[in-house]
Amino acid sequence: MAKKIYGIIGDPIEHSLSPAMHNAAFDAIGLDAVYLAFRVPQHEVGDAIKGAKSLGILGLNVTIPLKEKALAFVATEEVATKIGAINTIEFCSGTPVGYNTDGLGSLKVLKETVGNINGKTVLILGAGGAAKAIAYYLDTAGATVTIANRTKERATLLVSNLRNANAISLAAAELKDSIKDSDILINTTSVSMHPNEDATLVTADLMHPELVVFDIVYNPMETKLLREAKKAGVKRIIDGVMMLVYQGAASFKIWTNREPPIGVMEKAVRAALSRDF
Ligand code: NAP
Image (cartoon, rainbow, N blue to C red; front, side, top):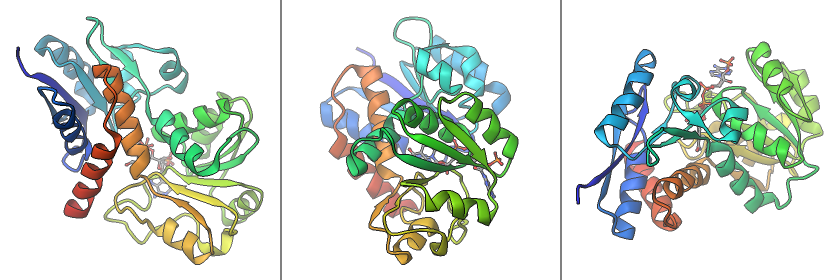
């Protein structure tokens, strides 16, 4: 039987950790499959999805900046339609079907640290693709969500699709007020991502020790925001690695219907991060 092919599309794509994570998972369960990274410019996303189907590729992940554009070229399951972005496509049934596993991954990570999300107050920095997915899952789980974004209109639009949420700007006074009343702070912006490792939207003086601080950025693993959280005496700090692993594991399950080897996937991601960044 021919080797099964999976992959990821995005632009840029060189630094994606998904090939290392999924190839390690395929090896671990003895699946004769390979996972490759494909650089696809925004205007070619439709051609890439159609081409992948013709080539017999069985599954794709979709990353920056294609998650919203790709929606137009697949049938989407209900949650992905509500979120308005996909990060996973499966081709098994003939028609490409789009899913969003980012929100699922973030919710799993948060539940491991916080327990029940219902009734928690959450401030999310950012209103991009990842923020949409995370906000949808937290809102559905019963959290009260505030979105703070550089482009306020984007935050306002995101909030209008949620049940119990409001939008603020990134002005320090607004952030301070919101954080004072928050249980959880989540950074979903790319602000502190490599190579801008000394940038952060929130500093220690705005935080309190009972806050849970979660940065979904995983390169570097310890972002400036997390370093500031430590300075403020924050006890519960979460980096972006396990969200990456859980969203990848959910894609893996959709494609293969096999139990993902979470430990192997985490190990592969941490090894690639310590090698590449
Ligand atoms: P995106 O759709 O491009 O959104 C980027 C967000 O960052 C927007 O809200 C944008 O604000 C904000 N932003 C960018 N530069 C900024 C700046 N200088 N100051 C203030 N805000 C700024 O990207 P995404 O897909 O949501 O991904 C965002 C980050 O999350 C990336 O670093 C990505 O690697 C990471 N991520 C991690 C995981 C994981 O599994 N751990 C999953 C998905 C994404 P505007 O709206 O004003 O432009």
